[in-house]
Image 1 (spheres, rainbow, N blue to C red):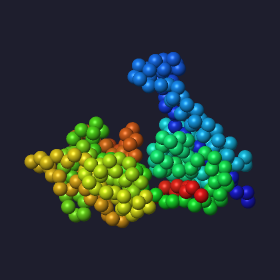
Image 2 (image 1 turned 90 degrees about the horizontal axis):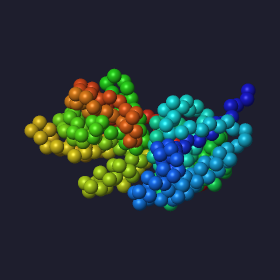
Image 3 (image 1 turned 120 degrees about the horizontal axis):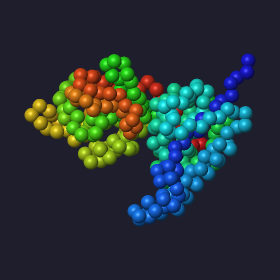
Image 4 (image 1 turned 60 degrees about the horizontal axis):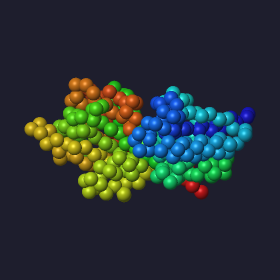
Length: 300
């Protein structure tokens, strides 16, 4: 019986240049907008061309007998990824995080079109390396690194999964009221939200929080079976405390949060605020390691 050919799914996002044209309709209007703010449209266009060139190079590298598809960031949540897919993400590190929660073990090739601008933690590959890597990935033999993910589960079974971190708080990032339980200790709190981060997320948002507090997260690796919990700007009130402002969850340990917000409470992952779980008064969320991993191709 014939085996279904792999499908290469290229994931992209609009360039800054394309977004400027969408907003201002014409190139001249976009130029006027940027120049009025002391910026240069030509530099933005050069970056756009580099991104387009990288995408063309990746598309040309797909074996001719493979199936292929392309999805923009805005359509990721509506795209049906198949088990035989090989995912090629062309863009910034954040785009890999955007797609990770919709996958289930597929290999991801993260391609960096602008290594002089992007950190490349999750997009370590150059466009010209893809041609050699895809056939190996199609056979499932490509070396990969597994990156742990974090999940939040509501008491009604709704769930959200993230690669970097999960945020629990108010949608406006104003003061959020809740009860946090970690390691058998419970504390009522009022804060600007809770961040639960993986080792991957420890190089991003959580790293900034940790540096401000003198907490070194460098030992928290991407494959680590640990999560770090940060409470942002906890307020020491008459009925709220600040003692549980940082904790580390080991292995199967969980953090529990019960909402005391009448409205506006949300839970979202990896900074995607429009994809959230409502977290209003009385709802309880459990935060822990997710069962799924991201399989990220390593440079060879």
